[in-house]
Image 1 (cartoon, one colour):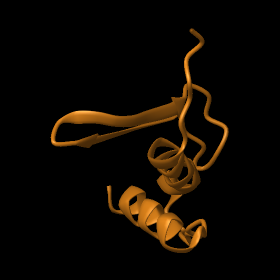
Image 2 (cartoon, one colour):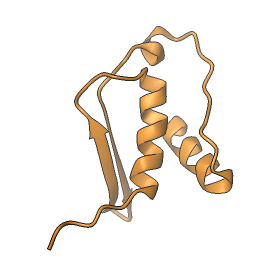
Image 3 (tube, one colour):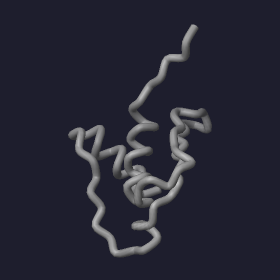
Length: 76
């Protein structure tokens, strides 16, 4: 949660992506990730992947930013 929140805050502040330096094997292991953001229990954004492409720490940071900032218009 802290990584996701900090990643969003840093991105909104100065459009930078959080760089994480860690030796934690779990955070360095590629993982499938979904990030869901809510405000007052209302869905704000949700995005993720079922494919373990990126290390867990990078996936959390990048998908948190995407959930907070990307918008998609559905076809009419």
